[in-house]
Image 1: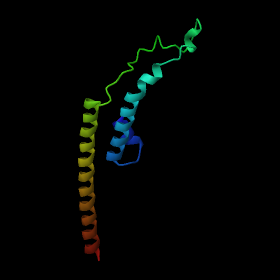
Image 2 (image 1 turned 90 degrees about the vertical axis):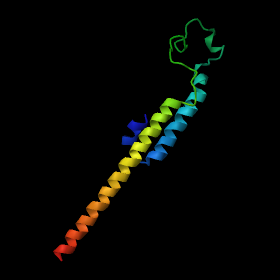
Image 3 (image 1 turned 180 degrees about the horizontal axis):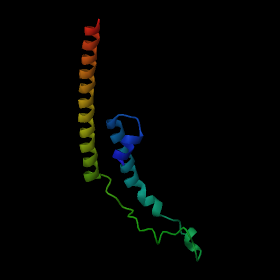
Image 4 (image 1 turned 45 degrees about the vertical axis):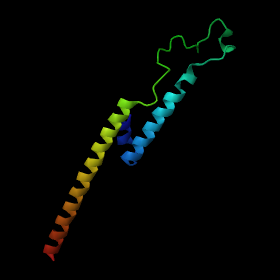
Length: 104
């Protein structure tokens, strides 16, 4: 999710990583609430909204250790990529300035 959103959203990689981590922590803490249906709702014989066929897990570990470690690794890679790009931009601007000075 982090890598896909990094191409779609225009925000800093650190801010995006923070938002993605917060989303998944809140999702893990509240997923079990989506599986609870009141007894009055289940009293009917047929109910198309019952959760018998929902095979998704409803208890998650909100730490997401492996996933968050992968996000941190991608974040470090993005930070190094932007540092390299910024240094290349500075070098190209210096070269342009030298060329402009030599033309005068």
